[in-house]
Image (cartoon, rainbow, N blue to C red; front, top):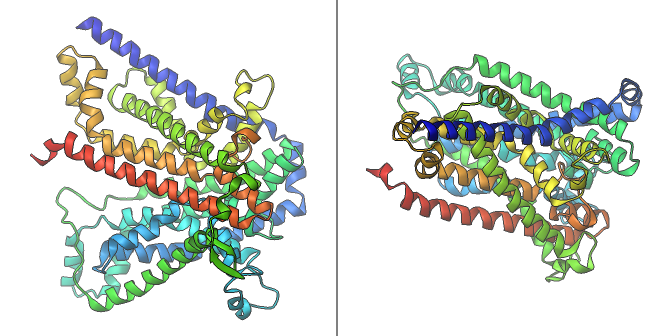
Length: 550
């Protein structure tokens, strides 16, 4: 038994160091490449340019405007889902989270079809000042609102779902009205969620590439400037400087979030009582109206692109057709781009889930390599503060260098899959770490006392318990890889073009209907895989976790 234990510990330590090596090679070193490429002269020259200053100001103002639109709306919907008795909560939740299945370019395409030069509702813009157009800040803000809303909703729903009913009962006993209870109890308890959602929306809106590219018009933002410098002018030095500028809002948001997290207090204790909303007709009616308006906005931006994919010539010939799905006669890589995306997403989900699970398990259950574990814990939170555009730029600089031993990966599917895994690593890591921490450590101790290797306990006990979380991580990585644009925009070749990039290229070529068709396929594929994984999770939950019901 001591021999088995010693061999198992050595094997676990080896795996931990291998996982660390993977994270260093595919996350840390590419980011360091940006820091080393951006020289002092490049920084001074780039930052002093009026065009870059204007782009930075546009990025900031658009992010703030998006936040002002998204945060109140997401809070109202999250409040309705957790603190009311409105009807149709499952349907409302499904509609509000549907944008997660779509690439960020999809709402921009819908806005073109609704309010563009030939838009179905372009007359509605007559109420705006003269010269105002959907092609500019207005369109970008509306598109970013669609793109960021579900992310803010998830954070705020989690924050509002935890509440101690005793606080509300005590406040009511002391004569506090509904508004006072909301201001003194609900908002303070949700403070961390509000700050987290706000920083997330600001970062996503300030660093997004897809929406401004499609509907930005003459409005320049930093993400577009980085794209133009690297792809258009092959100026990696200036691109690195802009990448650093894109990193600043993400780092500032991350620092603010961490500061608030240290001061946050638990909303539930061992003696807390779960809060349940009481019936209130007036409150539920107002929340239903507000949620209905949000749902209409989201459905309109999702539905317009889907409808346009099946309409012959919007808005002149509204007859149905499948001609726009004939991608072989369109720019953008044809059906191969969709197949590439499916393969890439599957590979990213499989490899990413395996990497994250092994790393999280070794950190939480087999801490036999303290040095590697410390570094892995620090690196695991880095992707949270790194926009996809910045990570993709680091990959392009690091792996395109001929002296790099991994240079052969550049332009291939393997490197793009690695970029997707690293870009979305933090959320997946936190999900599995949280799940593993809920399992009593005595299980591993019992396994050791019986002379079994840790891998036996992992496969027979731990893995079935955390299977729901594993499926959630797989779904998250698959859908995110299917819809991403920014982190792969610098990495693809003509042979490895992806569906999300095909949407961008077809829109650039003027084939907007074909772009809408490809975006519709992405949504359909992401939805089908999510439904399949939900079914698998339900089946496995009944077969592998019956003991939970005993």
